Image (cartoon, rainbow, N blue to C red; front, top):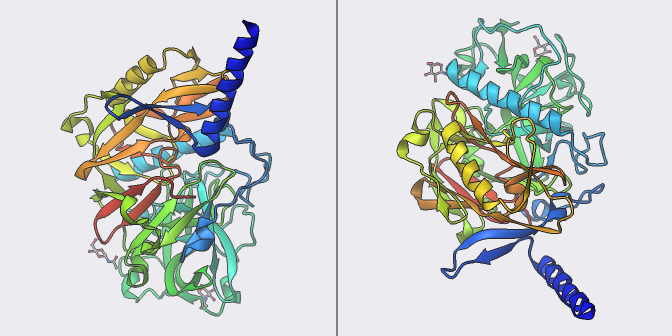
Length: 469
Ligand SMILES: *[C@@H]1O[C@H](CO)[C@@H](O)[C@H](O)[C@H]1NC(C)=O
Ligand SMILES: *[C@@H]1O[C@H](CO)[C@@H](O)[C@H](O)[C@H]1NC(C)=O
């Protein structure tokens, strides 16, 4: 009897192991052929990762930059090489970003870039800035000076801290860019058409200012410079902000790479070179790498499914339409009214997807039903639905899928797109409800490992699975 039991156990272990050699998750199919749930190894939530695993994609694709998580083993900005993320800090930062989006949209302070005199710079310091969690390293100036920037689909103007830091600079990991040692740097004059709306001038030079909703800010010269994305992608006369007065907690990055919809964003400025198309893949964990690719090289042929993208109240954000959400075999009751008041955006810098309170409540109810076999545990921060997986090897979670405008369905088929792991004994549903004064935000946890194509010129946004590998 016990021999038989052992034999079965061995078979079981072998099966689990074999599955794992080939796929990350095992889809459970119903008779209809539809996938309703996935089985994952609990350990896959916690990559054993003091070292960085490089994806080959960025180096193989033209016009492609390597993307890393700010706080992980792949980031040279991180001092914390054991890759144990400071979740509280990440989540506090995330809430600050959501507040910032709310504040920008409600003030109708359009793109958050203001060149007017009325820009008041607050004097408080040590405030967090919701600038996103993923960074790329680019070269600026001649000779090229490398800087790591948080890339942000919610910002237009790219900026970096500049010497001599006339006002003040926060502490960054790399040396601060010094425009006076670059031969390709040019101040933009106040008489220039791009500075037309800018009434702030200093020695007849155009001055920009960006104030974030959480009171972080950057201010300095609006300038032109050479940007080196890759050896073969050198862009001259890119407008950017040379920040001489910067405050906030930018996690030691040198500034922000603006990927928004506005005229001053990098994709808009380089439209003649890259057709206003870019794509990225955010890595599955902080110890893997992804990519940010300019131009259409990142479009993986037929597997990309497109949805229309909309301008969002003249902000830099990319608006999308969420028309349905399913959890396992159950469709949530989403009516056109569920999202209509504030709409929805996709954002590279928001971590956790925010849904209108009612929609989130329904998602949670169905998810809990499907997860009833697991031990529930206490919530944490914005999370109210958490599980204790201690002692379990595998878990089965219902498939969550978003239906977007144009009939595109985005399936969250990786465990890390649905659950946020603190410890084995506290793994939480990675969604949150927020009151109705912000748009719904499709956050970066839910975007991980997908190739996401921003075809701005074509007015569409594309999704394909497995974009990083
Ligand atoms: C840009 O303007 C600032 C402020 O007037 C000045 O200090 C700096 O030398 C100028 N840089 C160039 C390259 O003209
Ligand atoms: C200046 O502002 C006007 C009105 O707000 C706008 O139409 C125009 O495009 C702006 N010019 C620039 C160069 O941004």
